[in-house]
Image 1: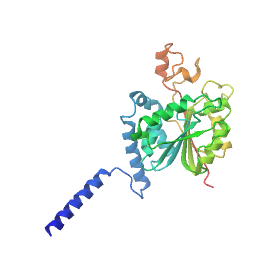
Image 2: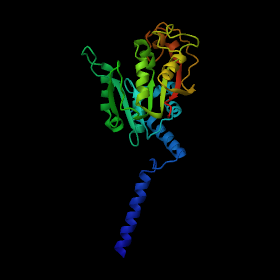
Image 3: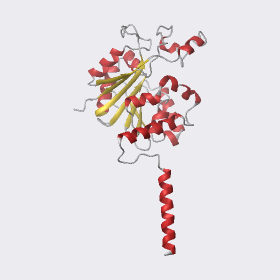
Image 4: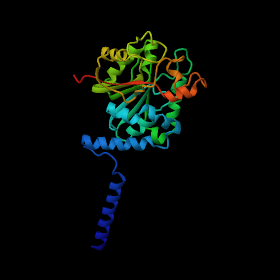
Length: 285
Protein backbone atom coordinates (compact mmCIF):
# COMPACT_ATOMS: atom_id res chain seq x y z
CA UNK A 1 0.00 0.00 0.00
CA UNK A 2 2.85 2.36 0.86
CA UNK A 3 4.43 1.85 -2.58
CA UNK A 4 1.05 2.38 -4.26
CA UNK A 5 0.43 5.57 -2.30
CA UNK A 6 3.91 6.87 -3.13
CA UNK A 7 3.39 6.13 -6.81
CA UNK A 8 0.03 7.91 -6.84
CA UNK A 9 1.53 10.98 -5.14
CA UNK A 10 4.38 11.08 -7.66
CA UNK A 11 1.93 10.74 -10.55
CA UNK A 12 -0.24 13.56 -9.21
CA UNK A 13 2.82 15.81 -8.82
CA UNK A 14 3.93 15.07 -12.37
CA UNK A 15 0.48 15.83 -13.77
CA UNK A 16 0.35 19.10 -11.85
CA UNK A 17 3.78 20.14 -13.11
CA UNK A 18 2.81 19.24 -16.68
CA UNK A 19 -0.39 21.27 -16.44
CA UNK A 20 1.50 24.28 -15.11
CA UNK A 21 4.06 24.06 -17.90
CA UNK A 22 1.36 24.27 -20.56
CA UNK A 23 -1.05 26.56 -18.76
CA UNK A 24 -0.65 29.28 -21.37
CA UNK A 25 -1.28 26.99 -24.33
CA UNK A 26 -4.66 26.85 -26.09
CA UNK A 27 -6.69 23.70 -25.52
CA UNK A 28 -9.35 22.31 -27.86
CA UNK A 29 -12.09 23.26 -27.93
CA UNK A 30 -11.27 26.90 -27.20
CA UNK A 31 -14.01 29.47 -26.77
CA UNK A 32 -13.66 32.61 -28.92
CA UNK A 33 -13.10 34.72 -25.79
CA UNK A 34 -10.39 32.42 -24.44
CA UNK A 35 -8.67 32.23 -27.82
CA UNK A 36 -8.68 36.02 -28.00
CA UNK A 37 -7.08 36.30 -24.57
CA UNK A 38 -4.46 33.70 -25.49
CA UNK A 39 -3.76 35.46 -28.80
CA UNK A 40 -3.17 38.83 -27.13
CA UNK A 41 -0.85 37.36 -24.50
CA UNK A 42 1.09 35.38 -27.10
CA UNK A 43 1.48 38.47 -29.28
CA UNK A 44 2.85 40.51 -26.38
CA UNK A 45 5.50 37.83 -25.68
CA UNK A 46 6.46 37.64 -29.35
CA UNK A 47 6.79 41.38 -29.83
CA UNK A 48 9.21 41.43 -26.90
CA UNK A 49 11.10 38.42 -28.25
CA UNK A 50 14.90 38.41 -28.16
CA UNK A 51 15.07 37.23 -31.80
CA UNK A 52 13.68 40.61 -32.92
CA UNK A 53 16.35 43.27 -33.36
CA UNK A 54 16.09 46.63 -31.61
CA UNK A 55 15.77 48.26 -35.04
CA UNK A 56 12.78 46.08 -35.91
CA UNK A 57 11.15 46.67 -32.54
CA UNK A 58 11.57 50.41 -33.03
CA UNK A 59 9.26 50.22 -36.04
CA UNK A 60 6.37 48.80 -34.02
CA UNK A 61 5.20 52.35 -33.25
CA UNK A 62 4.69 52.93 -36.99
CA UNK A 63 3.48 49.49 -38.07
CA UNK A 64 1.29 48.63 -35.04
CA UNK A 65 1.59 44.85 -35.58
CA UNK A 66 -0.54 43.80 -32.61
CA UNK A 67 -3.43 46.07 -33.51
CA UNK A 68 -3.12 45.41 -37.25
CA UNK A 69 -3.19 41.62 -36.93
CA UNK A 70 -6.05 41.84 -34.43
CA UNK A 71 -8.01 43.97 -36.92
CA UNK A 72 -7.45 41.34 -39.60
CA UNK A 73 -8.60 38.67 -37.13
CA UNK A 74 -5.45 36.55 -37.33
CA UNK A 75 -5.67 33.60 -34.89
CA UNK A 76 -2.81 31.28 -33.83
CA UNK A 77 -4.61 28.20 -35.19
CA UNK A 78 -4.94 29.48 -38.77
CA UNK A 79 -3.05 28.96 -42.02
CA UNK A 80 -1.70 32.39 -42.97
CA UNK A 81 0.11 33.32 -46.18
CA UNK A 82 2.15 36.51 -46.30
CA UNK A 83 2.95 37.72 -49.80
CA UNK A 84 6.41 39.04 -50.61
CA UNK A 85 7.63 39.33 -47.00
CA UNK A 86 10.89 41.03 -48.04
CA UNK A 87 13.49 40.56 -45.27
CA UNK A 88 10.94 39.07 -42.89
CA UNK A 89 9.86 41.88 -40.55
CA UNK A 90 6.38 40.45 -40.14
CA UNK A 91 7.68 36.87 -40.42
CA UNK A 92 9.49 37.31 -37.11
CA UNK A 93 6.07 37.91 -35.57
CA UNK A 94 3.77 35.63 -37.55
CA UNK A 95 5.95 32.51 -37.72
CA UNK A 96 6.32 32.07 -33.93
CA UNK A 97 2.70 33.14 -33.38
CA UNK A 98 1.45 30.34 -35.66
CA UNK A 99 4.07 27.64 -35.17
CA UNK A 100 2.32 25.57 -32.46
CA UNK A 101 -1.28 25.47 -33.70
CA UNK A 102 -1.32 26.99 -37.18
CA UNK A 103 0.90 27.45 -40.22
CA UNK A 104 2.81 30.45 -41.52
CA UNK A 105 3.72 30.53 -45.21
CA UNK A 106 5.91 33.17 -46.82
CA UNK A 107 5.25 33.48 -50.56
CA UNK A 108 8.25 34.87 -52.46
CA UNK A 109 9.12 35.41 -56.10
CA UNK A 110 11.09 32.61 -57.71
CA UNK A 111 14.69 32.54 -56.51
CA UNK A 112 15.94 32.66 -60.11
CA UNK A 113 14.77 35.39 -62.47
CA UNK A 114 13.79 34.78 -66.09
CA UNK A 115 17.25 35.86 -67.24
CA UNK A 116 18.86 33.28 -64.95
CA UNK A 117 20.13 35.76 -62.37
CA UNK A 118 19.39 35.19 -58.68
CA UNK A 119 16.58 37.07 -56.96
CA UNK A 120 18.43 38.70 -54.07
CA UNK A 121 15.27 39.49 -52.11
CA UNK A 122 14.11 35.88 -52.14
CA UNK A 123 17.53 34.81 -50.89
CA UNK A 124 17.53 37.45 -48.15
CA UNK A 125 14.23 36.08 -46.95
CA UNK A 126 15.15 32.39 -47.01
CA UNK A 127 18.46 33.20 -45.30
CA UNK A 128 16.58 35.01 -42.52
CA UNK A 129 14.29 32.01 -42.00
CA UNK A 130 17.26 29.63 -41.87
CA UNK A 131 19.11 31.73 -39.27
CA UNK A 132 16.54 31.15 -36.53
CA UNK A 133 15.16 27.60 -36.61
CA UNK A 134 13.81 27.88 -33.05
CA UNK A 135 11.38 30.68 -33.90
CA UNK A 136 11.12 30.59 -37.69
CA UNK A 137 11.91 26.98 -38.53
CA UNK A 138 8.25 25.94 -38.82
CA UNK A 139 7.64 28.54 -41.54
CA UNK A 140 7.06 27.29 -45.05
CA UNK A 141 8.30 29.10 -48.14
CA UNK A 142 6.42 29.06 -51.46
CA UNK A 143 7.99 30.42 -54.63
CA UNK A 144 5.75 31.82 -57.35
CA UNK A 145 5.98 33.28 -60.84
CA UNK A 146 4.95 36.94 -60.86
CA UNK A 147 3.35 36.58 -64.30
CA UNK A 148 1.25 33.55 -63.38
CA UNK A 149 1.13 33.51 -59.56
CA UNK A 150 -0.05 30.53 -57.54
CA UNK A 151 0.38 30.67 -53.78
CA UNK A 152 -0.84 27.20 -52.84
CA UNK A 153 -3.68 24.72 -53.38
CA UNK A 154 -7.08 26.31 -54.01
CA UNK A 155 -9.04 27.20 -50.86
CA UNK A 156 -6.18 26.20 -48.54
CA UNK A 157 -5.54 29.41 -46.54
CA UNK A 158 -7.56 31.12 -43.83
CA UNK A 159 -5.81 34.48 -44.22
CA UNK A 160 -3.66 36.17 -46.87
CA UNK A 161 -1.69 39.27 -45.86
CA UNK A 162 0.31 41.75 -47.89
CA UNK A 163 2.15 44.74 -46.48
CA UNK A 164 3.21 47.64 -48.75
CA UNK A 165 3.36 45.56 -51.93
CA UNK A 166 0.33 46.53 -54.00
CA UNK A 167 1.99 49.74 -55.26
CA UNK A 168 4.72 47.60 -56.82
CA UNK A 169 2.16 45.39 -58.54
CA UNK A 170 0.27 48.33 -60.03
CA UNK A 171 3.57 49.71 -61.34
CA UNK A 172 4.61 46.45 -63.03
CA UNK A 173 1.13 45.47 -64.26
CA UNK A 174 0.78 42.30 -62.18
CA UNK A 175 -1.87 43.53 -59.71
CA UNK A 176 -4.89 41.88 -61.37
CA UNK A 177 -3.17 38.49 -61.48
CA UNK A 178 -1.98 38.80 -57.87
CA UNK A 179 -5.46 39.57 -56.52
CA UNK A 180 -7.01 36.72 -58.49
CA UNK A 181 -4.37 34.34 -57.11
CA UNK A 182 -5.04 35.57 -53.56
CA UNK A 183 -8.75 34.95 -54.07
CA UNK A 184 -8.08 31.43 -55.38
CA UNK A 185 -5.89 30.32 -52.46
CA UNK A 186 -8.28 31.54 -49.75
CA UNK A 187 -10.99 29.39 -48.26
CA UNK A 188 -14.57 30.64 -48.67
CA UNK A 189 -15.06 33.12 -45.84
CA UNK A 190 -11.30 33.74 -45.65
CA UNK A 191 -9.68 37.12 -45.06
CA UNK A 192 -7.40 39.26 -47.21
CA UNK A 193 -5.55 41.96 -45.26
CA UNK A 194 -3.89 44.79 -47.19
CA UNK A 195 -1.67 47.58 -45.86
CA UNK A 196 -0.17 50.11 -48.26
CA UNK A 197 0.93 53.72 -48.59
CA UNK A 198 -2.20 55.87 -48.93
CA UNK A 199 -2.35 58.59 -51.58
CA UNK A 200 -4.02 61.96 -51.12
CA UNK A 201 -7.80 61.82 -51.54
CA UNK A 202 -8.86 62.70 -55.07
CA UNK A 203 -5.61 61.72 -56.77
CA UNK A 204 -5.46 59.10 -59.50
CA UNK A 205 -3.26 56.07 -59.99
CA UNK A 206 -1.54 57.83 -62.90
CA UNK A 207 -0.82 60.92 -60.80
CA UNK A 208 0.69 58.79 -58.05
CA UNK A 209 2.68 56.51 -60.34
CA UNK A 210 6.21 55.81 -59.08
CA UNK A 211 5.57 57.69 -55.82
CA UNK A 212 4.81 54.55 -53.81
CA UNK A 213 1.42 55.95 -52.81
CA UNK A 214 -1.88 54.43 -53.95
CA UNK A 215 -5.44 55.71 -54.02
CA UNK A 216 -7.64 53.64 -51.72
CA UNK A 217 -10.28 53.19 -54.40
CA UNK A 218 -7.67 51.63 -56.71
CA UNK A 219 -6.97 48.89 -54.17
CA UNK A 220 -10.66 48.38 -53.43
CA UNK A 221 -11.41 48.00 -57.14
CA UNK A 222 -8.59 45.50 -57.65
CA UNK A 223 -9.93 43.39 -54.79
CA UNK A 224 -13.62 43.59 -55.65
CA UNK A 225 -12.92 42.89 -59.33
CA UNK A 226 -11.23 39.67 -58.17
CA UNK A 227 -14.35 38.70 -56.19
CA UNK A 228 -13.61 40.05 -52.71
CA UNK A 229 -15.90 42.17 -50.58
CA UNK A 230 -14.57 45.06 -48.52
CA UNK A 231 -15.50 44.28 -44.91
CA UNK A 232 -13.80 47.06 -42.94
CA UNK A 233 -11.17 49.81 -42.95
CA UNK A 234 -8.96 50.83 -40.05
CA UNK A 235 -7.00 53.98 -39.26
CA UNK A 236 -4.55 52.09 -37.06
CA UNK A 237 -1.70 52.81 -39.50
CA UNK A 238 -2.69 56.39 -40.33
CA UNK A 239 -0.13 59.20 -40.12
CA UNK A 240 -1.62 62.70 -40.52
CA UNK A 241 1.90 64.23 -40.59
CA UNK A 242 2.57 62.61 -43.97
CA UNK A 243 2.10 65.31 -46.66
CA UNK A 244 2.83 62.85 -49.53
CA UNK A 245 4.68 65.39 -51.69
CA UNK A 246 8.34 64.45 -51.40
CA UNK A 247 11.16 64.54 -53.99
CA UNK A 248 11.68 60.78 -53.86
CA UNK A 249 8.12 59.76 -53.11
CA UNK A 250 7.37 57.66 -50.06
CA UNK A 251 10.99 56.50 -49.94
CA UNK A 252 11.99 59.99 -48.80
CA UNK A 253 10.57 59.06 -45.39
CA UNK A 254 12.04 56.60 -42.89
CA UNK A 255 13.18 53.93 -42.97
CA UNK A 256 14.51 54.48 -46.53
CA UNK A 257 15.66 58.12 -46.28
CA UNK A 258 16.22 58.27 -50.04
CA UNK A 259 17.70 61.78 -49.71
CA UNK A 260 20.18 60.44 -47.15
CA UNK A 261 21.15 63.33 -44.83
CA UNK A 262 19.18 66.05 -46.64
CA UNK A 263 16.44 67.25 -44.25
CA UNK A 264 16.77 63.97 -42.39
CA UNK A 265 15.53 65.40 -39.09
CA UNK A 266 12.47 66.81 -40.84
CA UNK A 267 11.55 63.46 -42.33
CA UNK A 268 12.34 61.59 -39.13
CA UNK A 269 9.87 63.86 -37.32
CA UNK A 270 7.17 62.93 -39.86
CA UNK A 271 7.82 59.22 -39.38
CA UNK A 272 6.78 56.40 -41.68
CA UNK A 273 4.06 56.85 -44.28
CA UNK A 274 0.32 57.26 -43.89
CA UNK A 275 -1.15 53.84 -44.66
CA UNK A 276 -4.48 52.35 -45.57
CA UNK A 277 -5.46 49.19 -43.70
CA UNK A 278 -8.16 47.26 -45.55
CA UNK A 279 -9.88 44.00 -44.62
CA UNK A 280 -11.52 42.03 -47.43
CA UNK A 281 -13.37 38.72 -47.31
CA UNK A 282 -13.90 35.98 -49.86
CA UNK A 283 -17.67 35.36 -49.85
CA UNK A 284 -18.58 32.10 -48.13
CA UNK A 285 -20.82 31.00 -50.99
